[in-house]
Length: 163
Image (cartoon, rainbow, N blue to C red; front, side, top):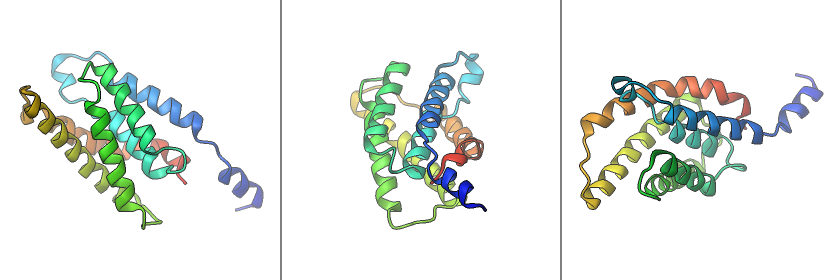
């Protein structure tokens, strides 16, 4: 690899990719689908947030997780702060538990994302139980599975901007 290529790769600014990926994820989260298809919708914003927090830690951290969580709360008309709290806890734990790992392989990121999706659904479940809102795991296990299966596609679309 030539020195010019290494310098251009090293100084690649991911800001444009971050903004575009958040916009695309938000569109995919609210795009109108039929009732049967909307039950299969993956958790795009959670996966995008987790990708950027793990793969660009100098650009995206806890405040990015908070911002995307509040943004999703507003988009989905959820109780304000519900997704934000979940995103913050997941981002903190993911960064805390992977801070010693310098090399995060695709498989490691896939496992972390799968665990994060399960943790997110459990946090939403407990928050809604405390609030007295009916929560059905039957309605949420399909998006969990589709999110875990869609992760490789999202990863390979965004991996160009990994550190």
